[in-house]
Length: 324
Image 1 (cartoon, one colour):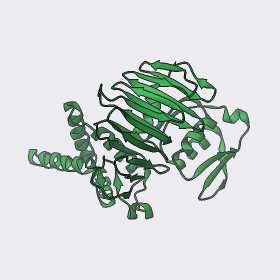
Image 2 (cartoon, one colour):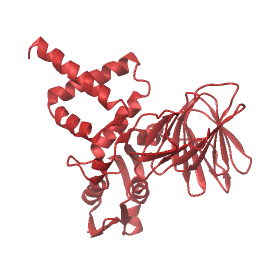
Image 3 (cartoon, helix red, strand yellow):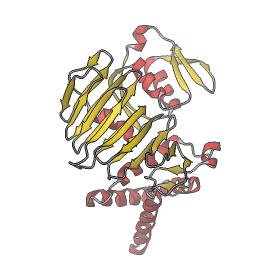
Image 4 (cartoon, one colour):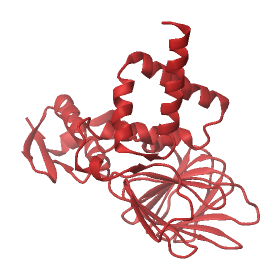
């Protein structure tokens, strides 16, 4: 290939990188990008552009946006369906000058005066940059309310799961409240997840103080997690932070998790649920691997192959698996 052709391909890759990280991705652009990237040389050129931005430390919020774009590309089929035709996928932070209610992609932003709420639907995910520069990424079926005041930055996790990257501000503590649990951050990255009446906090970087509804407190170090439940606050324990954070890239990572727990986790990302009709011994089978969040069909195919299960009933709302 000539030098001129190489330059042309590199320029095209740079243009596609700009389109795919701009945040507001048109379905037509998704289809065109897929077609362009089928050429291995185009795919290599795109990867080189992305690697250059990462090496330069210039991506800022863009790595998360690129990861979310990849998840969208993996999740939606080549042939556009009703969802693709009717929506745009908004993956970038939204500004403050929006209308009072905006429905986009998998999420809703409901502005209530100076205290916005951010919401995702089942299977949705969104990244927001708050007024102080802190970042919050919402997982599937989640909702947070932001309450920033002069003396405190407060975020209420009303349901679901959120990852936080907190901007340091010694004069205004950053606090996350979830079902009676209170997490105070000191310039840090952490994840908070609500499951029924339990709240799990996982620390990736920095330091956080967690106080349970019972008044007990714990200070976490990176790699620690703690669970706040009605029975009290657990002792901090070590976890695989890469597995915990895998959802932020649109993937779910499991390492020796019981099949029943994996099914429950996979179901969080899809309106169509997997129902496991199997003896306890099958539910106890350990699963290690990675799945695309929301890709129920691929998960079912893997479960059938690895654990000898078969589909015994299937509807638009659920897939029932039982031993073959």
